[in-house]
Amino acid sequence: MTADFGKLQFARTLTAPVDRVYLALTTPQDRMAWGPPDTASVVLIEGQPAPTPGGREMSRCGPRDNPYVDVATDWIVMEAPSRLIYAETLSAEGEVLGTSLATFELDAADAGTDMRVTVQIVNFSGDEMMSEFEGGWSHALENLAAHVA
Image (cartoon, rainbow, N blue to C red; front, top):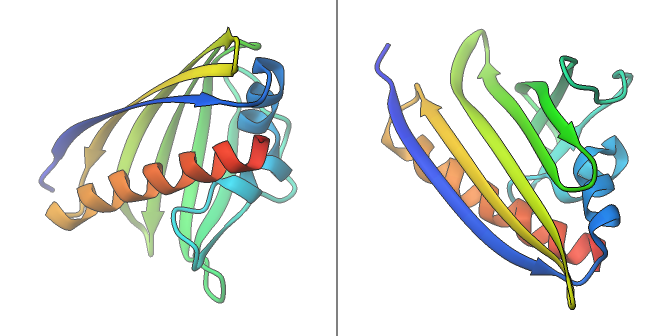
């Protein structure tokens, strides 16, 4: 299995207060609303324990009519409302597609919240998957900004 490594960095100023942004990042209903990687996809988080450091959540994502990607989210650091770190492993049909470590840093700002996101990626699925990670994260963060506005 070949692995490719990548790092994505994003910075956004969101018009919502930092507490609201943190809740949107950790509440399943909010994450299902803003989290899909594109307009044709869905994220399903059902019957899972509340996020807690050291906890694991299992969800599914993918096309609305067939969310076939399994997502294991391991909550690592949850320092409300300023910092959140979690790892996600995506797999489909028994094969690991990739894993990522996402770090969110949130600071109160005059306009709402300054958010910095760093995503470190290990990709096991070839070159096109890295661009899918980038496109998915970009789309989801734009959704997040609209969701909390």
